Amino acid sequence: MKVLVTGGAGYIGSHTCVELINSSIDTVVLDNLCNSSEKSLDRVREITGTSPVFYKGDVRDEALLERIFSENEFDCVIHFAGLKCVPESVKKPAEYYENNLGSTLVLCKVMARHGCKRLVFSSSATVYSAVNEMPLKEDSIKGDCTNPYGWTKYMGERILTDIATADPEWAIALLRYFNPIGAHESGLIGEDPRGIPNNLMPFIAQTAVGRRDRLTVFGNDYNTKDGTGVRDYLHVVDLAKGHVAAIGYIMEHKGAEPINLGTGTGISVLDMVETFKQVNQVDVPYGFGPRRAGDVATCYAQADKAKRLLGWRAEKTLEDMCRDTWRWQSSNPDGYGE
Ligand code: NAD
Ligand code: WQD
Image 1: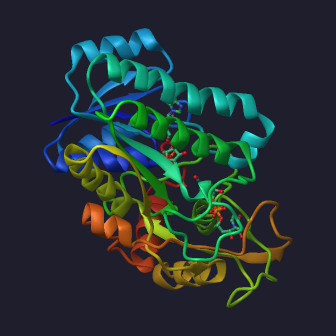
Image 2: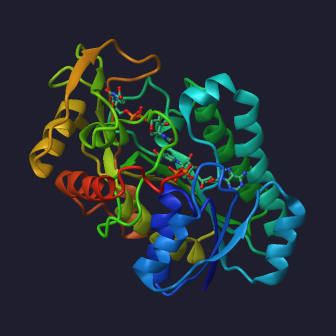
């Protein structure tokens, strides 16, 4: 079995490479390194003993993709490559639509030309409308996205669903991730955001290690148990294993299938801060600030479809997520150092 992993040097991609290699799957990475470091792939080799084959380049480069597909016979593709920063997408919408949709369109064109019609797509809980009751189910209402990034995922799903409808040979898993956090338990790979982190866990970790003075908790007046936002955080290694399970599914089932990957449990910002402090015995100074525009009070998954279709469920605990994040952050205070 041979798999092309676009965006494989990134946060979720590098953890998925480890799980693919550990499952004896030949792993080929295509990444332009616009938001990652090639060092992550050296670390994948340190963990697994095997280097993924690496092509440096852009998924939108059709000639390059054509060459990669001529040099390799892939059973399927996992498509992580994309831009993912919500506030940046508000400032640079065209760049987001061009990258996230352009890469998906070129990839599908070249895949079809080479008769490779199995795809795992990185979608997101962000495709769900804020009007839904919790938990979010795969058939909950989608749309009303609050930012261009969210729309790129919504539209990406639409494009792929239409492709699978037009040509019934396609098998596509639309994996809707909730909030991936944590790091490989070796501490060798983890999340390394450029600039000031937008997301909660990297901000907590960088505060604990002294790179940030203090965390601002965005809002403490939500209708939640302690007033702070509640999310469905899942360990990135569980998420990576979900991709291996999804490959098993698309080897056997055609069509485009949306599947939530989450734990089904809501955790508040204060739960997260307190667990991080307690598990790691470190301080995380914080204060309260106003709500962040576009945030909802609560977001968590109904996770039973993944169990039913993929035989997958999240196994790691919140303590594991906090401990593994800290092992990565404290042994790599500057991430990959780029
Ligand atoms: P990441 O930025 O760490 O990884 C994305 C990788 O894609 C990077 O290595 C980047 O260099 C590469 N890339 C981007 N555009 C490219 C292009 N045109 N050609 C080649 N390479 C390109 O992000 P991540 O957190 O690992 O996310 C992976 C995927 O999962 C993304 O599609 C993201 O939108 C999606 N997702 C992430 C989250 C999350 O919270 N991290 C949640 C839901 C969905
Ligand atoms: C979590 C909670 C914040 C930072 C985002 C994207 C989403 C998805 C995952 C890709 C919220 C609070 C955060 C901080 C805080 N990505 N917070 N202080 O907003 O659920 O989802 O990442 O698809 O599209 O929108 O995650 O980690 O940013 O925030 O208080 O400095 O932490 O208000 O309640 P979010 P997050």
